[in-house]
Image (cartoon, rainbow, N blue to C red; front, side, top):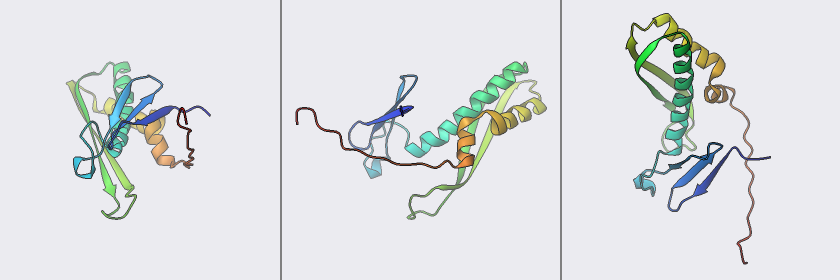
Length: 145
């Protein structure tokens, strides 16, 4: 089984992720827990992935509908379990699409968001089905040992 993403430790709390595109990004922890501010936290990357996935769908759909979007951002938040209880999963998430453009059709925007939510966004679909996750481990031999 081949990995789709490889994440490598960069020292301290920094980890660099590389997927099929070959373009890396670094995740890090907050400075108060040993991070150096080199990138988003893993949870920020997760929420950003949700927003990015949906945004790409919505923009693509609106372009096909000849809608001229001039500004677009997505806000993502949610409700997590209480602090001090780990692993603190999200119990609920919300996604708010905020668009500006020339004579945007509200029906077209609503439909684009709906199609992303229900049909196209792999990240959102994955979060909704809560797939099983199996963790494995191995100890690799050090070269020259």
